[in-house]
Length: 93
Image (tube, rainbow, N blue to C red):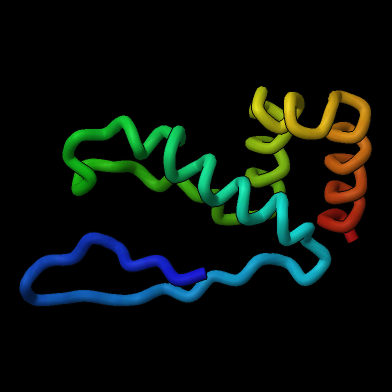
């Protein structure tokens, strides 16, 4: 994935972020679209004032995943919990 942060006339940068190789590609694409359309940053009028939205470590990402109601609707509570537990074990390794 490529992210181009908001810059100014003196600077610009491009970030390359890839997902884990064991990620479900369909869930990744859905998550990206869902976050972009309905995420917290979509509601901010001035994006220069936006706070960091993407997690910077696996533990925060797992926490966001378990708290998101749309993941429960998408996967079901049981599958969601099993998936979160597997990712937690992988992170603890």
